[in-house]
Length: 239
Length: 321
Image (tube, rainbow over all chains, first blue to last red; front, side, top):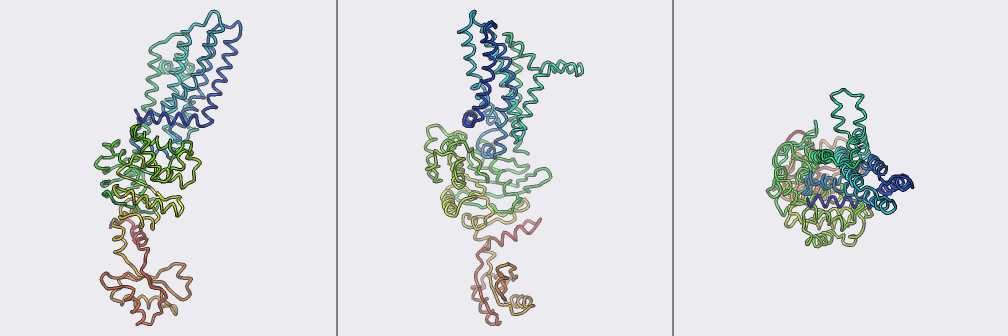
């Protein structure tokens, strides 16, 4: 765990030392801020953050793969994986550290948006219902966690970070539209697709409902991805 | 101590390593020599724990690299050939990160980093970004990064790569100094480098060990004398061969077909392999040549004998000496 933390901290440092990290945060905050200002801050609009959460969630589709794409791919490409895997670091703590690093960056990116509900609290009368706000943030974190975990898995499979980005992007896209594609597939596949559908679960959170089965879905699928990535890294020794 | 026992490794249809074994003791610098694609890097990567052998066992100070990997890797400092580092990190920061990976307590980290910086003469760039350093400095930072946890076993892949002659000298004395109480395995394709650094040489080719022995011994058992004699007319080669063969202290004779030799008008180089215990080879050859009316221009003991051992070892395809 200590090595995982060292790896996570180095990773986080690498995000903030490159312009890319700051650019990702800036774009994310600009777009979500724009939506907040246009939808929630406009006089006459209801005091909710519904639109904000909708856009903040959708923006994770390109942003999460951008955060996760180089987590392991870059180590493979630059050869630093060789000095990492010959240190007393298991594949498991390496991947856990990488995931934690990416996840912390994602949280750092989302955190400043917490001023939006505070602003709303201040300017709107009646004040907004905090239930959907809290469930909305929980959804963002859970969704972000799943996407970063998917990205870590994709990144563990290739030394090409563009490829890792695309793999993650399309898998997330499929998860988002899994429920919609129902009409084109045979009947027995439909319940499977519905279970995988992230959008169906997201709509519950938006209403302020925190269903434990949804929480378990996100955490369990993220864990599967992280374990998969750790296995992929360890298997490289045996290739 | 490194113990490698009948190790095999294949990549698909390519059999990179086919049953290599050796045991390395502390206080010894061993050079792993071989042409490109000989299985050198694969062997080194297996010793370092980056690759797992298909068959056979490797242990570091008694810890198996597969059954007890974390303990085994804690005892190794491994510097890959490409010296991978993170260009955006500062030197001190990177070394501290390496300390953390090796589980060094916070209280000893600073001391360990200072020691490694000092040892590799990179203290003056401790606050610089690695990406902004020259290749020589980056190489030394790489070396510092594998020393930082003070491992008893060091595995260095081409450690003097990219250094200028002054730096090579420094690196060489550093390596020899480090070797005093450690086990060192160095891979290189620069033969004089291995000859200067290593007390033992293992030559691999085609995934097997072709020669293994003390550097002096492996080369010394094959001591040759280089003679450059005047050839007056065509066909003299056969005459010279017969002449040399008639000398009782000459075990073998072969003409040297090098361009520099060809440039010396009218002279031809011969490499004579002399029998042990026949006396001073140079004197004997000189006297015999004089008695046979040969004009000798050059007569010297061949220094590049490891090269010849190497060439012969890698040429014997398929056979294991």
